[in-house]
Length: 252
Image 1 (spheres, rainbow, N blue to C red):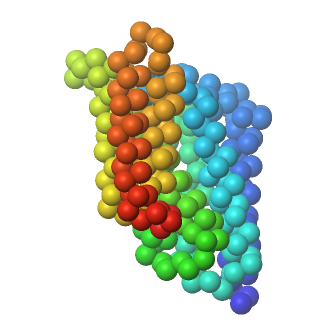
Image 2 (cartoon, rainbow, N blue to C red; image 1 turned 90 degrees about the vertical axis):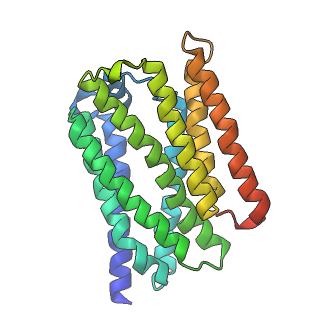
């Protein structure tokens, strides 16, 4: 019991540290630039509208539920299996904030890839562990599903920013075309994971990111990107609906 409470304590500290680092990144801000201002230094057609990033509020709220639940059910097998990976994800999240704000884009991509791999492991673990209650599905399985999905999108965006920072010529392919290629990759990933693991919320996150890209470019000269984003959005939502229709309430 003592060790499980200790794990719950470390989980709480890791979560608070992550929230604090992300808040201070914009309040101080770190290195005199908020997160959005750093992103603006590396303009990419793949980066979605600012409103899209509000999904972090949902992810962190659900992760808060994970932290609280660990105190209430600290002896549960699921926490023994996920706690250490969660701590690593928090450390990587914080590290990325500092790398990004100090304009170390290549380092930030490396950290992001490590975070992606960590969340992929968490995603697979919570899929394998049997969860009989709605509370466990909502505050253990769902947050890591949404987190993993969003970091898949963030990884593509981060790599895009790196290519902009090094002024990569793009094999003489137009930037708009590259944006559509990256959106297609994100959409295919969303469909694959949703279909293979029967998890509709993953597709919904990808669709939300595509919606953000549509919102950003609709009514502009980049209308081709907007229409491509809208088309892919509908296809991804279709895969989510199809999964939900087959599984109904087992989509988490």
